[in-house]
Amino acid sequence: MTRKTSTEHVSRRKFLIASGAVGAAGFAGCTSNPGASGEEDGNGSGNNSGSGSGKDISGEVIVKGSSTVFPVSEAMAEEFMSENPDVNISVDSTGSGGGFENHFCPGNSDINGASRPIKESEVEHCSENDVNPVEFEIASDALTVIVNNNADWVDCMSFDELKQIWEPNGATTWSDVNSDWPDEEFNLFGPASSSGTFDWFTENVIGESGAMRDDYEPTEEDNNIVRGVRDSEAGMGFMGYAYYEENKDNVKALQIKEDDNGSCTAPSLDAAKEGNYPMARPLFIYASESSLKEKPQVYEFTRYYLEQSETDIVKDIGYVPSSADNRDKNLETLKEYEG
Image (cartoon, rainbow, N blue to C red):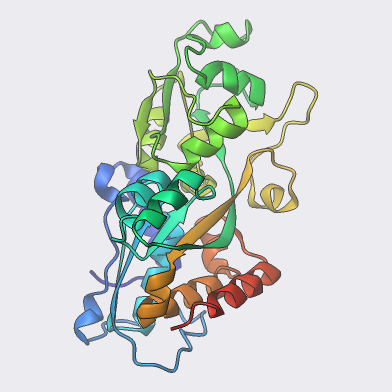
């Protein structure tokens, strides 16, 4: 695979989703370094300072987890591998919970991306396998609700209206929620229950973690949500802001208000950063303590990731970069685990 800079990669992903040229595996594939055998075939974008490790590092780094965090981890991996050709980093989109359950906590991956904090049950699962997760908050997201471009009857929704639609045994038609809306049955598309986005939405919008109607189309692939809503006039879905930003010509983002008396706010990086958008949320990576201490390539990639989380790599993908203070706090935490 030819390496690309993060900006080139975002453009490539935007084209693939918008055209529908890739299937569900389009985002679930892995990033790997073709130069890991020792021959480098390209350079980084030139806007980063490099790993700065001063070490000849090699080996494998396995990253699983959130589909929301996936494009950030993939961009970071590509940039890092361009500067460290003997390191091979694989990045797979498995969902936050799927990554913890099936890969990270069993000890089969080094890093897990998550669009919500790790659960106590997951910490316990990790502990059973002597895996100690180290948390780093790396960005913020404006979780986005999308509808079909032809849904001209709706521009803004409250949490209560969203709850009526998405809760167990929720509303069947648009008019069930608002009599001014059409008497058309919903076509709903959203993250699977293994997704951190699913967890955040059910806990903060529906009000009960894991509570969701069972007749929507769940998927780990956000591009499937985009395509489902794009192709159905009665469609609705929700996902991370970056995936909406890549497809803003294909679907419409709703403004959101917390209650009927609140102000409608459109999802944006500025609104999320300023705290004005009700569905803003933090994004994380979790690194295995043993991997940090025993695998120099994992430690150096994590350090690089944290250093670059405050840069335009994150912003260009569609998320709010980490603050300088948070970056420095993360790096101080990381130092405690240097091997």
